[in-house]
Length: 345
Image (cartoon, one colour):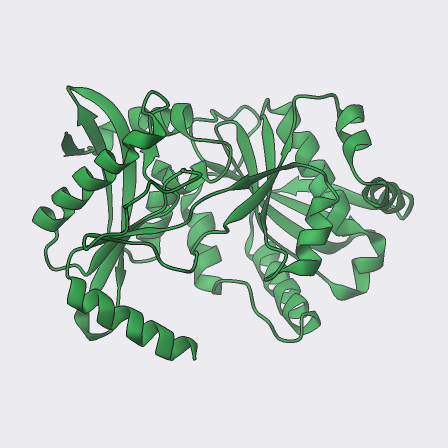
């Protein structure tokens, strides 16, 4: 197998491969645009095709992450993207090829972390070259709502309390608009996140303001007739009267619209604006010909309340095996895991 760097003029071909060969959940993290966003955060990014007998069988974006003491590793979020023509039992050959290439090209790194769209690991993968961490970077489980039915049928598939909350939001005159990004909107969202954090007993699940600023500077804004082979972002704002009550950010790529982040003012929770925002994003995704609305990660242990809320939308649940770490410097990898456990403690 041969691994080649993808040049800037092959952006369309790269996104086309990701679009054609990725499962419903997580495709946006391997798009060209998401790589540009990672670069805006100050990270080095590389994009690659893996070819077998001249045919592209995988594509992946690698993001370099710095560690203390001048060390670093690279990470392929929800990657590599593997051709549908490749059988899952052949994945090991792809991982092995990437590992041998990384050891030659980036010998200074500690490891490379892959996050393949596999549902199970092959026997014997955990060797002196590979390690399977006991934790996950991206959610292990995601819930995505199929959009092949009519709006009425989708609504009817929801739990009765979800249908009731959508109607309640309408009766309480909650309005939803897709709005352009602006400095004022950004400030409102940050204020909502602070309110949400306080409501959650100080638990912060949000990245930094710098993250959101880079997101809107690099990801194209959702247009009226977007090409879904390009990643774009829509800002859904729920209003109570003239006052913004909640904001959701939704990514559009390929066949899936993905809920990314949202926040709500506590004083408007009773209006059920959050449920209404998801419903309007679902309707917008369906209008644009998407096949799924990914409402995000679920986990009964880590996020029991949030998981119960999302499951009331009655979507399909997708599970993934998690991370595969390919070791480049095994001793330093052991030291990295020791420090990581110490920091967690």
